[in-house]
Length: 168
Figure 1 (cartoon, one colour):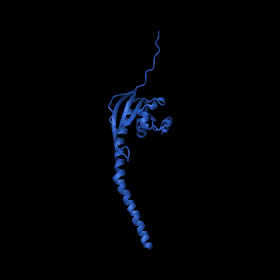
Figure 2 (figure 1 turned 135 degrees about the vertical axis):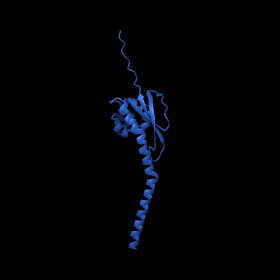
Figure 3 (figure 1 turned 180 degrees about the horizontal axis):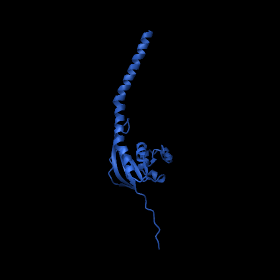
Figure 4 (figure 1 turned 90 degrees about the vertical axis):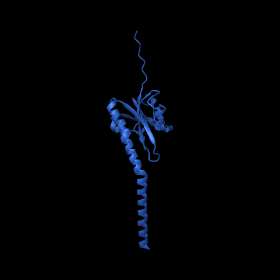
């Protein structure tokens, strides 16, 4: 019977390894490749745009900061609160990063020069309150569990004009 126990354990291990490889090749690998493509065609070009087209002291608010912070060389505000703890109270109130940006909840916390919004819909280049849409880029496969097309839109923040004292 000892000989059959080892054979059974070997067969069970082989089945588990085969199952893992099938799942990896059918679901995980395509998701990783889609994510890598999205990074290469969306977030990294956006970050490089900031490096080439914005003031070195510019402050950028975004829901996803990894590639943006690495490639842009700009001050990044993290709406998810990972590196910008001032957003944590908003998150604890049930506001996800997208809502913080979409509902302009960041206005009382931070004064960014640019905002990056994320949406499933194409954003037309039109003004949104104090935001002027500059450009959008598509990103397919942002998550493994729900692969879909997401659009990242870069906005320039129009800061309110400061009243100037009139001279007599």
